[in-house]
Length: 395
Image (cartoon, rainbow, N blue to C red):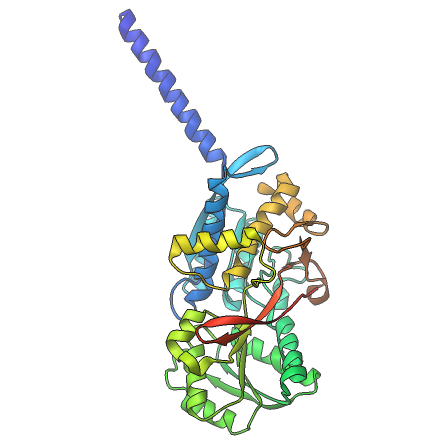
């Protein structure tokens, strides 16, 4: 081998080595956060809001250079899986996350999926943030799930109390899809209404998820003449149909739900018939939104051409995960360190004005801190958009 060939070979080896090292460094400095939830079908708006919130916040952070944790700067990569609201697919999605070495997953969005993935999460050291309400997911011996929003059994009493005191509601009726999520939320709602001294005029009427004609469903419920009709756990696609059917039947009372809704879907499906419809909104209002929240909304709108108010809540999960990792850098790969940090964790809330803090709550409901502290914002639909009815907090 002549000298020129040797030099060329050596140079190529050096370049190859540098390329390999750069690729390795890039891989080591990428932090993957997963999503397993519903992004297709009637409940797609719930999971789509999750994914878009994660992708928007990740883009904002990456454009600013990434996130520094324990002296290393990471670019955030969002890995998504559409479980189609099917518990079996949710399990497959969580297994895929485990295979990729992902320790933090946001979702699933419904009770069945959140319960189904628990064994996989616990066996593979995955912390996950469901938007599902069964208390057994967040009470001991369960430790890996963190409730990402205000639960229906927390928001329901607040809504009913407000309507009783401010709108004169005395009688309430419930209708729910024949699925575990809505039925569980209905039962919680009935218990909360009863505890407040409201008369429950109907609570046993259900409908199948593929129902398209809600007239026969609602007729016996509305005959009980409630002041408030609660659509327990209603999916975004079904809400406008139920609202329109109730109005077509002559119902003039209040209608509410404890699930978050999409104003665009409501407008397209029910129009002005939905005016006055009350639902849980995103965890922000113009009055409390910080400049950072406004930046997030602008970036989200730029990326996706629209904005979903529910993302005011969904943006919190990724922020909590990253800020907790900053406080306990070992938690990137050791979820025991993450769990230990949760009990005392506190950080500035970048999405709210003033001195609001990010903390973990849930002791009252679950006996341990397994819930993100996000504001409870209750909205009223009017003329194509949501307006803030009131804001509260939960412990």
